[in-house]
Length: 225
Image: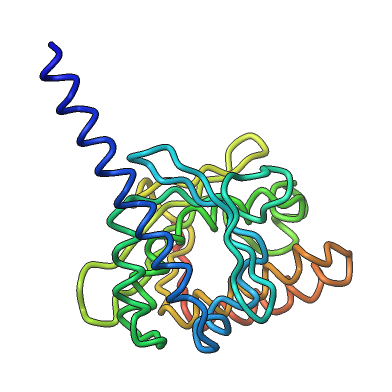
C-alpha cells in the first residue's frame, strides 16, 4: 500500500510539474505580436482548467500582450475552457515560431470550438425563443470545423430545447442547417459575436443579426423535411 501511494504521488507530482513548466513556456511563447493579434477580439479574459490536475488559471488579453493569473474568478471571465496537458504542449509547439499556420489554427480552434459555442449561445439574444427566430437561428444544427489538411473535421450539434441550448460533441439528429466552416470563417464569426456580447446593446445585436444572415450563406446549407 505504501509503495502504491508513493508511486501515485510521484506520478501526480510529475504531471503537476509538467503542467507548471508548460504554462511558464506558454506564457513566454505567446508574447509575440502575431499571436496577440491572432487572439484579438476572441476573448479578453479566458479561464482555463487543466483536466488531469484540476489546476485553474486565467489568461488576460490586454491588447498588447497576455497576462497570466492563477485561479479563475468566474464572474470576471468571458469563457472557461477545459484543456488537457497535451493541449498545452500542442499550443507550445504551434507557437514556437510566433506564427500560426492554417493547420495550427485549426488545432487551436479544435480545443476552443465547443466551449466557445456553448457560452455564446447562452446570450439572451439567442436563448430567448422569439429572438432566436428573429435572428434566423435554427433549433437543430450540425457544425463542422473543416481541417485544412484534409483530416477529419471537428464537429458538434446545437439543439434548442425548452428555452436553452444544448451543445453536444459529434453529430446527432436531423439538422435543419449544416455549417462547414474553415478556421478563418470560425474566427471571423467568433470576433463578431464577441463584439456584440461586449457592447450588449439592441443596436449591436441588430448589426450582428444582419451580419450573421449574410455570413452563414458562405458556409452553410439548409435542409427541408
